[in-house]
Image (cartoon, rainbow over all chains, first blue to last red; front, side, top):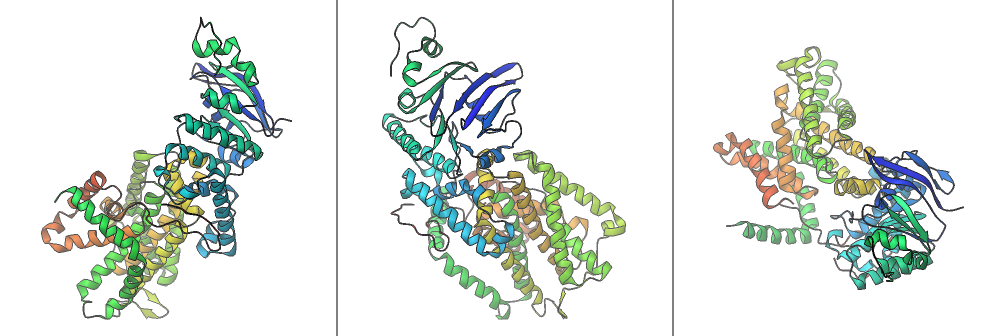
Length: 260
Length: 340
């Protein structure tokens, strides 16, 4: 059974059909990429999966449960799906470690009374969350930045921090929205290696990306979307040679197949 | 004298504060306990001290809502007045002991805070502020018109001094001073405990980016309501004290001017810092005392300060990026070479 099984989801805004009967799935421990020109509906799909939009038709199964239109975004996070954003949405004036600590929020089990009276449970849970946050920062290589404010981090590290924060929610499926956006060659190579290590640690990742070097080298499978519809899918070598894909990106009358 | 110079001075002052702050705090608290017995403690000095402590606590409370959670409330005087009226009426009309009336006022103010948060949950920015203002105006109109309970514009008079365990607290026996000192200290501790917890982090994440907070699983509705409730509860407590301090209250005691004044203190001192609240209250209580001219134009000055601070130093006088490392909870092991 796939971890994520998306069947025929559609959404329209006013008259505009943003996503048109999209169908795809992600198996456990896979890295699956969704690519396509701008405006193809990719981030809209992420917004649907994370409960920000309700859909007009279709089902989405996570671990066999059809949750779409039924769960609030927070409940979906608790269920096991977390995401990063196309434009980085860190808590800029909070420290790096505090950002990750916010990620641990849903698994930290104490309340208002525990906070006021500093109960045993408060101390245990804070210790647990903090140690987990430190561990995650160590795994992503941000230990040396632990105390810094998120806004003072260089761009590439901010991206890493956003991923670290998403990991901290203990999610089973990571949705990464253009993690390589704005990165130069060195940074995107590092990111590539970083995502590869995530896979080795048994993460399951659904990726939206434009950087073909990243996509072609990291993905187990790729789905290509254009104008809200799926136009191609397969393993990287199949997709990069697919004429429909080339047309969608580059327009008509292209003679050579671009191989990145 | 230009903005850069002022910023440079305040920055060096801030460096000093962040190094020696803890010692200053301890010394400050000891001084506060000892002060009434020193020759400096004239009637005027005592009265000003009480006012500074009242407004410090009000600023602390508003800061939880506005500075940490990012919900700009300009109707906050509503909770102040509600606490005052609740305690005043319970004591004068039902002969309930101040101590009990005080805690009832806190609880009911907190509940009012929950109520006041409801219309704001889907609002943001200026709309939220205006909603809080509207709510406060409705409250004032109720105060004026519900004559059976509140005496309308005649107000509540002859509010007795607080009586705790048989002892009446008066200016003469310094009882009133110590009562507000304790209220301020307890409120400060509560604020500190909340801020340094996952609740505090949830508040701040909502201010920073509510959508991202939602997508980290945080129930933003719950935390916004909680922020309102805690803020209102503390404000109501101060209100209850105020009623027995002034001994007379009426609907005109609680106007938007006071809401703006408290907000000015929060912003002047430093939005989102606790230390700024005491300084903001200190400065804005003392300012009108310096000259009669300043006194009559004080609301113009408060507004001016608001504008100037937001323009030239939005982080407030004591607002700055943290200079010390994050304090880990007890028993957490780290092995790191870090730079701030």
